[in-house]
Image (tube, rainbow, N blue to C red; front, side, top):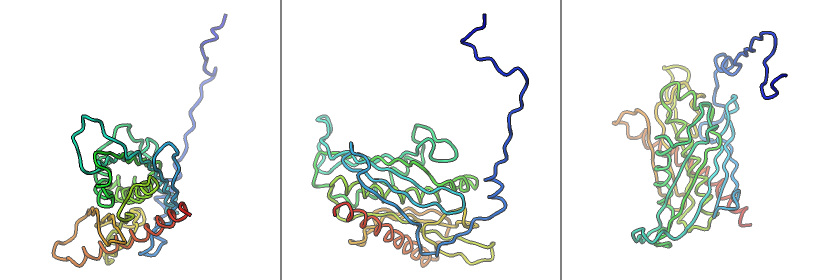
Length: 286
């Protein structure tokens, strides 16, 4: 009598199929190039109120580079303001808690369920960026939790990882986190002095080492030969204030004009993202 609980294999021997990785061949044969002007960011889609159970929520999607890579998709939910436990010491200001996490399937290399140092750094920068925009005196001894989930990261992150530098794509992720968190805070009805938005500018070099470096906004590392430096800025356009500035790269300390130009381009990218944010909030109110 045959065992019905056992699944028998095939009678004859079989050879598992082997497939060629077409994406690797395509990336080796064709070099991705930037098709956008140097001062234009990628198109964005922003929508609020996507999580009914949260006090406020938002969803942000940035289009792909058009060279086979994926775009950036982020979801943010805000819980609060709510009263803190009685055992918590009195605080005259609201206590802000930020949490940024990549989904396990967000990148080519599967992420763990426990936050790594990169995700903790993103949460720290996000808290600093949002703290400058929230009117914290309105809610004494209260807390608010801001949770950002990166549903899909840019596939071009593998290019930076192969070079040993992941900060370039991390800055793009931080810029999106700031924008989507600001929209979620507005959806939750938390008073802010202004809508904060994130922007990234980078000093890149193309067409060999002889070409002069140029500054571009919203950079994608795979579209350039080399990224020399980059900065991520959280900017309040109405008050003309910078709430967070993250700089990464190697630039001569004597050339202060280059630093200023890089910051100005980052502010320009932040203003472009803020227009999308304001239009989305106007549609929600209307």
